[in-house]
Length: 370
Ligand code: GTP
Ligand code: MG
Image (tube, rainbow, N blue to C red; front, side, top):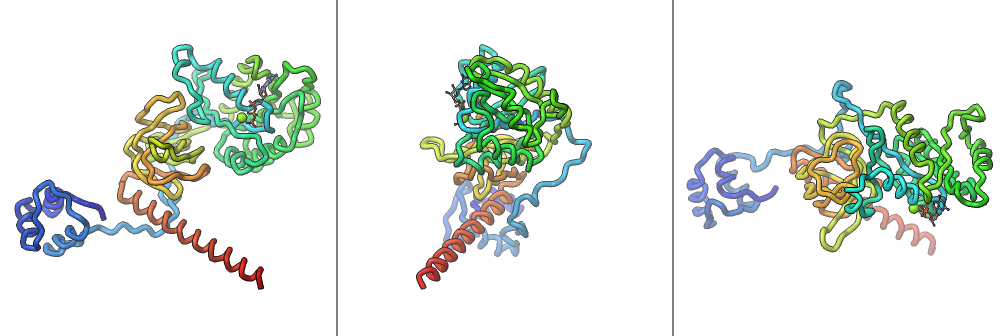
């Protein structure tokens, strides 16, 4: 369903516009060539010609993962690694990211930098690296778990003066569950009381054994505040990325994950997406979680407008009909109608599930009262 102009309908039916206008007139509708026709009127005219108004697109599965086809290995090319910064609250994750960005972004670009999105890209030895920040507060377990799932490498930040703390352990669990390699960044080395050896001892309990003790885990000692050890860390990230042989197919419809999303007063729904495979283009029809639309505009990590987002790129997009949730998956479509159908089906399913949840809750409440 959707509207068509008289001339568009005429073209679809291989008729002259004037003929359609005449038919409409006989049905009591006065129309001009450029007039929009509603679905009912379109159907009426199509019936007159014995044509079905709409080709039916079968959405047999509302789960859009079905629209993701496998890639031919021949189409795969190298992609930037996605690196998630994890660790206990206040151990210096965000400061570390700021420090990396400061050393890596050229002076000319510096003016344009605002911490636009919680994800950004830097270049080290001609290799791009995409970084994602995560919060260390105990309440954000799901964000850390999600971070571990979309990432290729986890940087475990541990403050040298504080050692292994509850969310350090939690981050290790998420990364190990997702089978993601961990690089340990022993931070705050500038602080009095910094004790990197203690950190190493403590982490051995979690199978993170430094090379100096015969293990395989990379430890980098640094000070995010002073900018010391940052280059070592980047070098290690590049090394580990090379071992991972990370690949993607840029010549296909995009798919990936929502990093964050919110409702903006001026721009409406704004979502930060990590493109994990394919290339996302402005104008692409897209289903994001239970929302859908067309990519209206894309902004990169430097706050600049871009038209394309290749694999491993974080971008902020507008154009969705709702606000998706962090962690939702997205899939781009070649056909707007299909995107809308899949999106609507998912929205419908969500409404029904919510209703089911509510019904269950009130039933439970009822039983509790009996
Ligand atoms: P959450 O996001 O809340 O989990 O914290 P975080 O891990 O992002 O920590 P953040 O970067 O906000 O830093 C917390 C505090 O530690 C700030 O006051 C930083 O200035 C300080 N800090 C971070 N890195 C260093 C460091 O290398 N040395 C010293 N002395 N202080 C640091
Ligand atoms: Mg932080």
